[in-house]
Structure formats: C-alpha cells, structure tokens
Length: 148
Image (cartoon, rainbow, N blue to C red; front, side):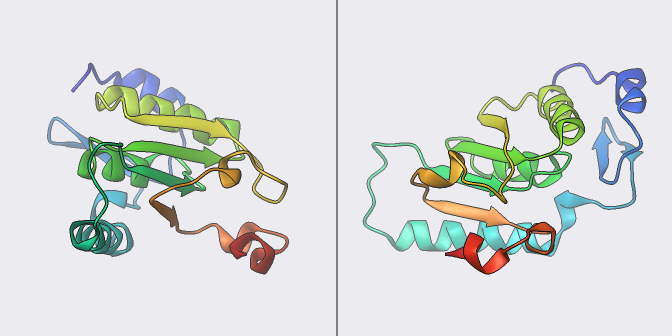
C-alpha cells in the first residue's frame, strides 16, 4: 500500500464511502468492501470465467458504470488484479476521490474516465468481459435505452 495521507483524504471530503487503512476507519458509513452486490458479482464472474473456454492470452476487461468514490472499483481491482478495469463517472469530484483511493491502495489496473452515460459514450462502444453497474440506473434519463 502506498502512503495514506489522512489530511488529503479529509480535504477531499465529505465521503459517502468508508475505507480502512492500517486498521483505522475513514470516510462515510457505506462500506463497499463488504457490499454483497460486489461480492456476488465477483463470485459469479469468477465462476462463469472458469467455466468458459476463453483463453488467458488476453487480460480480462471490466467496465464499472458510475464508480462514485472508487469503493467498488478498488474491490474489483483487488479481486481481479490481472484485469483491465475501466471505471466511469460523470462527477469530477468523485473521480478525484477514486483516484486518491486507488493510489493510496497501490492499485494500478484501473483507468478512470469522466463520462456522462446519459449521452453516447466511448466506454460503452467497447467490448468487455463483464460490466458492473450498481446505483446508476435511477440517475439516468432513459435507463431502458442505456441497458440496450
């Protein structure tokens, strides 16, 4: 783990997501690392990938739509360190927080991008092995179109 700067963490606040560094709790009350939705996604994706005939010659590609402060992003990146993870959010402040958390955690397999998923998106025009999307649909103007 890289150096965790408490002052920088607090300056980026307030936080929705809670994080643990060196045994101490920081941030908000919501803990992404114990969220059953991301844990089920990881288990199911591992199961499906193991059952597939896909070779390991190419890295896994995962898209996270609406990464917020990087809580789920860091869980996914740690669960799949060999994967290329693209995490998108529309809010610059959320992306700044996510960048800080990923850096403090020593995570290097994530690319953060600012995108409005209510509009045509370069992230959505690419191929992925899996897409993780939690807490986003109710923010979209046309969620059914997004899912298509």
